[in-house]
Image 1 (tube, rainbow, N blue to C red):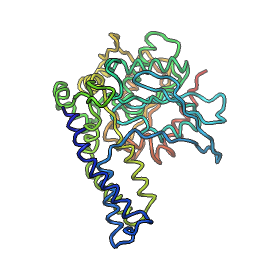
Image 2 (image 1 turned 45 degrees about the vertical axis):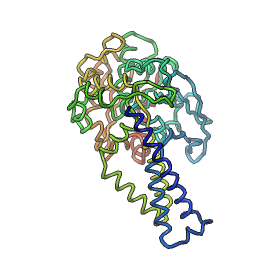
Image 3 (image 1 turned 180 degrees about the vertical axis):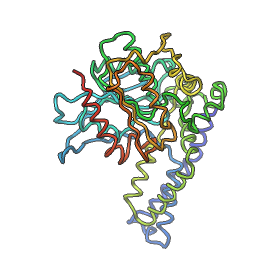
Image 4 (image 1 turned 180 degrees about the horizontal axis):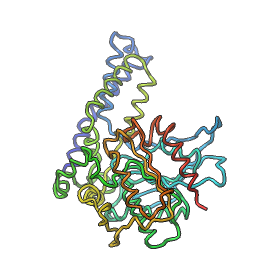
Length: 408
């Protein structure tokens, strides 16, 4: 019912959005006489602001056609290398990439946003590596005939992708997947599979949320799993291929994202309005690009969402040695041949400093000289993998780490 009400609200607001778009065009288009009327720039700016608040944001395209390396532009190829009902493994490779270039498996979060949120991460990695990204499919687009998607299925997907890419790859996990990625590599080490990654990089992830808990962690601990199931889970409406699938809807997750920093988002929209009036096109376009991505959200399968809450946020099963995947206990200490790097942001209000660093104590089987931790000053959660500090400060150290621990 919750999802149906949301869809009905969207349908009711659609005419208002259409009128706002029409108003923006009438008062902003230089070929329209109304654009020269007094106050037209304010009407156009307000109309665009209203239209953007109402519109539904679809999954953005990757839009990475080329990268510049040492002053030379290189075209970029994007292909689906491996497909499952729930995920496409997308390969990005620039032309004239050296034959000895390493492969990087970039595991994107399944936490409400699309994998395209890592566009800036891909854009830097592809300069030096052949990059594969887990592009998760919105569950509302997956038929119920495919079954539910569990936490264990996420782990299995990571393992299958590692096996597909072969021994000696580098695995980089951003935020939510740090736990299932660590579980996947641990289980492969426990079973002595001969496909060990050369390195594992965990960025801003909830390995142990008891360390310096954030507002997100406190909220989760203040409620029971039953509370989340009865209030946050609904079924996909009939208009989508995933009709009747139980999901945690993306629009609820988006509301939670905004509620964490309402003043910041309100100020961003005020600034956008002022930039439009002042004719600051570059700043206005930067706002559009960010919020086109930020507002494009996807659902989460209910099984995966609830099991992640239980495993990671409510009972801390991984650091307590109690995490079970396919009836097998996860033992990170079994990892011996994979170098480990953790990256944290000093100002991260989603996964605070220390939560990711906890992985080093768990992975006691890795020699000390193959451990590395990077705490980045004045960087929040999204700054770990996008923006200027990612490009200029974090990526060079990440690249050095991967190159240093190249597989033999």
